[in-house]
Length: 284
Image (cartoon, rainbow, N blue to C red; front, top):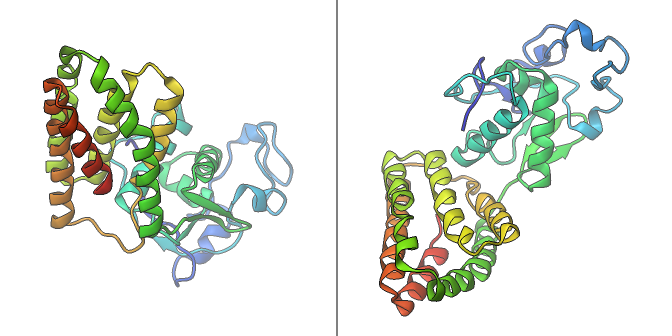
């Protein structure tokens, strides 16, 4: 995931005690000044920027003091083209790694300051995450990362299995071995990503493999729905923290991809079914 120029570190972790006044002051660390052409001084600007106190409750923008929560600096600068998409990708990475912490409220202006962009693309990206169920709008404060538990993760795994297992079993009867063999590089990429121990890198490669498998069905709607469920299943649980055991789990999950391909290439239907059930039951 690609992130911004000023460091993804310091986003409105409310309820603690430092850095609060700056978020609400003109020119402070938490407020991004709009370009002069936007005309945001006291009125709605030509580009549609919100007036503090009017649309903030709807947009989830912080309007008073908020202390800073430390997040790591982004790996690469945000380019000016397609800023919203890059910010959205960076926020999704932060969700997977746990840098955006469950239960914590983050505001668009403070996040924008860290990315070195205006608040608008950050707000739009957060609203997209709200539609996906990753965050919820907190009027006059920002966006709270949704807290998830074991039950939700189990439900997501069950729904994914209901969609993907029957489809892959159907594909196993119709797709020739050479087509399955073409997916070998993607499966091996998941092993390398898992070995790195980076959950964000593994999450991306894991989705790429599953997406390629389902794409063989030729149903774009199926692929889109399955990937949305998959992405949601990758958000960390409350209190979860990556570590050595997490890396072991990632590697074991990745090796199931190559084992599944071996069974598909060999046409071993029973083995395919067993591997699929194991993969979704123990999804990482």
